[in-house]
Length: 452
Image (cartoon, rainbow, N blue to C red; front, side, top):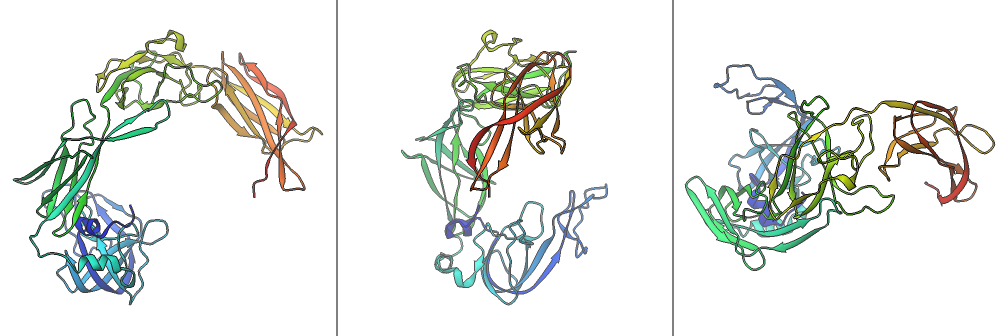
């Protein structure tokens, strides 16, 4: 995203030209499924003759059609006048062109679209500010000279459950293949993991031939490059370790939409949220943790978050343990892929209300005080939180059989530049039924900077 070196920007562009803005036309674009893009005014809509069913309609956000008179074309433009679309400029990356002004314009054409587009994330700019780009463009070699594709391959080792820090190490000797129609090019990375190769202009599929123990999902990409330009594409070689399984409900049916956790078997820092990563089950109840480094992992449900309305279940560890000490750790070697790690959800917990009031030391109700319910078996993350109403009252929900700590706090304005944060003495309660009539008194001060 954002401006690129002129060689790369030119190499990837559908068209590049110097033009003067003749007029601006605001309009939505009509998108027809299965067809090319047609304007909402139905100017020359192109319908697909091969499709018997009528095309469905949808509309993109409002666009601006910018009509240019072309003064000089460097690539992709053969007419004296051309239309380019861009956004309105209100947070949609639209470029704010001015009628009568001259610009150096870089465009792209999205797959399936009939129009050219540009944005603030390209090298498009007023002609007066295009010195470096023009210096490159005016020295373009003749057509047919070819282009350059370069990049790098690095080994990336991450810790998905311990903090997501990474190490990047270049990989030497990785074959790089570029393929287009019947044309194929091949090169290899050097000691710094870099590659560079000359090709004819066109669109190519680029593939890094990674060792089997690396994840292969992102080992190939598609690029396009123009004569005289260059393209840069790099590859991250990540470990290909995977842990897969399915989640079933208490009746043995596959359960979709369940968040499954993967954490380290090492002890977590006391009172801190559990580090780890999560995966969501699909409609078949399947989950898939990918790009895992070699190591030992604990698998389960509600290991990082307490039971909640989306997943009202007590924490469970693979294969069917209520506590980490009884869990079976899963060991993954380099690039090892393992499956069959199925989990069955326990019986849904029964929710019960926790009601009470937050007051100041003088007994007046505390409006919009912050009230949190913490599950003591899953520390660091509130099970539920809310604000008090004008009467200082609150309602939260916990689950039968769980032990919670109830906290409340609020700010009391002071005449100086500090605001005093007041806390109530936390209450610990084991929830066996609904609880009401609780009173939390904001009596313990904590000084903190006042928010402007």
